[in-house]
Amino acid sequence: MGLMELEAKIRADGEREIQDLMDKAESQITAIRDEINRSAAKEAAKIVAQGQSTALISANKVLNEAKGSAVRRESAEKNAVIDRVFEKAKESVLSFPDSRKSELLTRLSHDPVFDGGEFQVLVDGKYRKLLKGAGGKVVESELGDFGVVIESMDGLIRVDNRLESVLSRMKPRMKPSIVKMIFGGAR
Picture 1: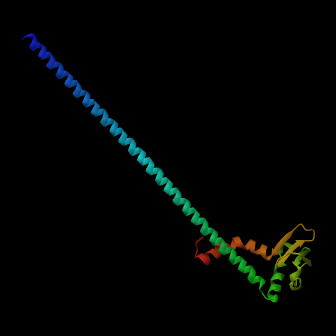
Picture 2: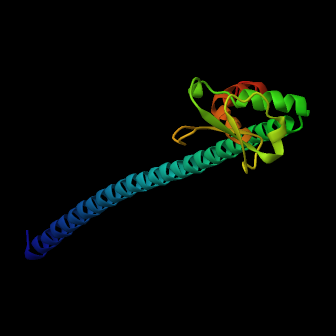
Picture 3: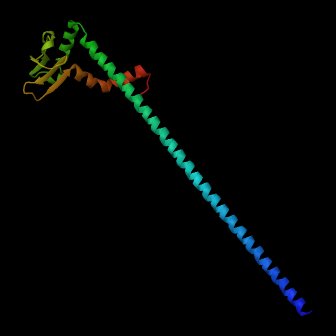
């Protein structure tokens, strides 16, 4: 083998080695690209999942806020209806004939708290003539409402039996029954 042949063989071997190195490098570059693409795809999927989760949470939040708002509106409407029921009750009592108003005032002027003691019954001047049979001293006063206020002579004990006060005390007890009658048991 001559120098030229040896040189050609060395060159061919060098070119083969260079080609092998280039093939290996290309293979490694492809593997690195594939890994980058897999990693990017995983990260993209993670970001999309987080976005979907955030969107779902936001949608649920909006939906819950809308439901809460609807429940509050419904509750406010029901309370307004109940308030109108009590207002109608007040109007009904005020439209009673004088004989019935007189009976009611007499009942309102008696309270077990004052049994056996001295007390006075305050009544608005508008209704003074209707109050009969009060158990205590009747005093005309500017109450501004139908009914009476009963108080001990020393003023330490006071029972407000004006129509507005009586209805206010009755409202919490009667509200469930009224709700059931009007709305069919929905509270």
